Image (cartoon, rainbow, N blue to C red; front, side, top):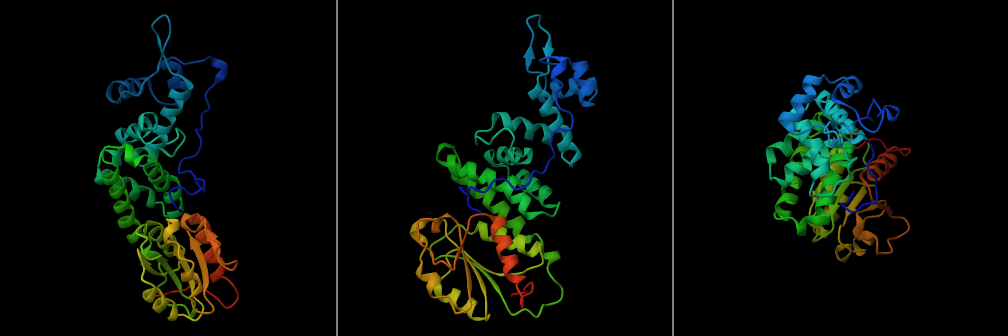
Amino acid sequence: MSGDSAAAARASAFPPDVTPFPAAIGAALSISATARHTGITVATLRMWQTRYGLGPSLTTPGGHRRYTAGDIQRLNRVTQLRSEGLTTSEAVRAVLAATHSELGLPPDADPLAQHLGAAALELDGPTARRLVSHHLSRGDVTATWETVLRPVLAALGDRWSQLRHGIAVEHLLSHVATELLGNHGDHRAPDVPTTNPRGVVLACVPGELHELPLVVLDAALRAAGTTATRLDATTPPAMLDEALARHPRPVLALHAMLPELADLTLLDRVPTGTTSLALGPGWHPHPVPTHVARIDSLTAALDGITALLAEPGAAPTDAP
C-alpha cells in the first residue's frame, strides 16, 4: 500500500492495443497506411499533428514523414482514452506526458496516471480531481489506487526533493485522493446492520501522519460492503484501546510508514481476541509477533480482512 511497496499494479484500465504494428510492412508507415491501420482518418491524423503535436516522429532521407511503432501505439492509446470519455486534448496530453514526464513514470504506465502526474506537476487541482473521479466512476477502488494513484505518488516520493514544488505537488495529490476516496462507496454501504459483532478498526501508530493508505483501504472495504472504524493519523493508544474494546473479536489494521514509529508494544496491548494486521513498510525491520500478519499492499489488506470476516461465525461487519 505504501509508495515504495513492491506490489505491482493489479489491473490496467486500458486493454492492450487492439491493432499490433504490422512489422511486415516495414519500419514505419505513411500517413495513409497509418490511417488504414488505425482506423483514424487522414484528416484527423493531420489535425492531431497540427493542433496537438501528435504526429509522425520519423523523417526519411527523402524528407517524408513516417509513423513508427511507438507513434502507432500512442495513436491507439489516444483512441482508447477517447472511448473512455476523455476529450481529445486530454487524451493527447496524457499520452504525450508518458514521453516527457518529469516524474519518470514508465512509458507503459496507465495513460491516466501519466495525465494525473502532469496535472499535479502543474498544480492543476481541478484536472487532477476530474481524472481521479473519472477512474473511480468505474467503481473499482483497488484499480484506481494500483494503476493511477499509487504509481504517481511513488514517483513523487522518489523525486519530490528534485521538483520545484515537490511538497506542494504531493500534498495536492494526497488531498484530492483523500477527498474523493473518502466520499466514494458511501452509497454501497449496507442499509441493514448485520448481526456480526466483529468490528474492523483502521489506525495509524502514534506520530504517523501518512493516513492516505487507511483512506484507500476504508474506501475499498466500503465498496465491498464492509464499514470500519477509521481513526487515521497519529492515533493515541488510549483512543485505540477504546475503539477495540467496543468489539469482542475486532480486526485491527495498524499502519506505520516509518520504522522509528512502528511500536511493537501497541500490538502486545490489544485485547484478547483481536486479530492484528501490520500495515506498511515501517514494520519491516521489526520482528512482529508470529500471529500478526504483515501487509504491504491494498489487495493483501482487503483480501485479508475479507477472509477474516468470512470465517465461521463472522459476517461483513457494520462498525460505527
